[in-house]
Image (cartoon, rainbow, N blue to C red; front, side, top):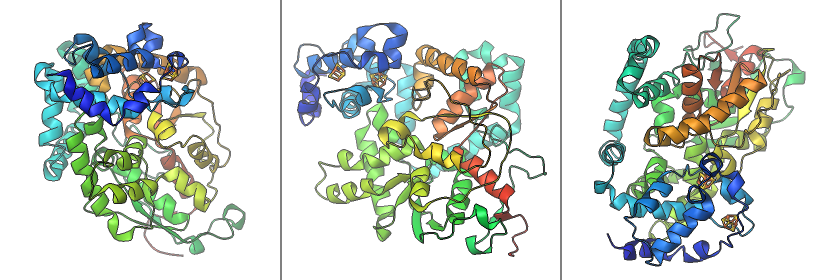
Length: 462
Ligand code: SF4
Ligand code: SF4
């Protein structure tokens, strides 16, 4: 493949590429650079490579270009510390788009990824079926048996980690605190806020009437539907009327991160149409990765004459559930445990959606929370979509630092706002034998609302 095609892909981003002043301030923020110490595994080196290919000084089929672009987590931590405002995420997307077109010359893992993205993820019925199979394997106990007996590891470490990822998405892994017999699979009914039996001191005097459309996500609905249900209950308790458009599809983050921009754009157009009938209503997500992707539709479709204006408007409507709660104000919930709870920030929630404080404030609505601060919470966990399966060694090293920091907090519960992070940290904790519950912050708030009496199990009203 000629380097001219990369030049054309990066042509509209040229000014962003040239903006780098090579100061190196981003290096220490970059998890892959910190681990390998290789300049080409840092943002500055990767920008050099992109520029060299763009200028025709390096072939876009060169091993160095492929290797170091592939080894980027896409966490965007480098963007936050860059004094020149280099929009690294968009440049990475363009470089990966070029590599994606050369996928036929790449390894088996990337070929499998390409097949899955094009023939499963773009077909909602097939994707639904694939997640049904995944849930069946997860619930059968077979995956757990392979892990416990060590057979999975004998087959391959990558296979073992894949099974651990699946296991860590199970409702059991995100189990409730359960002293009063509330089972995780039960779905409590939401009482109208005006009917809540909670003490008056716990309830905001007035609530802004609000509405929201929930983006439920493919992995979200496929493996973490409990988080979606908790999100709806928590929003409704706080006066937000929630609807879930049925025509929505995957956000396209996996496609964009893999360089399949055509696939990502096709999904983006479908989502914009699915959420278009109520244009003034915010689109709420509970997945940092999806939220950052949805918020980037304006950029993704900037060259699409038909969809560009709608894509910009759509991106402005995206909010994490914590940001929506901050806006409307949230009721206080009861205490759920005295055990220490810690929080890990999803990179895309933090750097893509700029939701640093809102999730912590959401946790702050839980009475008497024993919060343990996590050192390096802002650093990537190594999940990064399916980076953990494509670049397992480097991913494991990034994860090892995260697990060590979690151990140091003494926490037995970790909350994080992205299913990929939940699975990555959960799989690492599972294989390391750690006693750690991983869940979404909104699940904890949901539980504290259940304790406060906001929900009833029998569906009756008071
Ligand atoms: S996105 Fe993350 S891994 Fe990639 S260069 Fe930036 S800081 Fe490093
Ligand atoms: S901090 Fe920004 S300007 Fe400095 S080397 Fe990194 S990307 Fe370039």
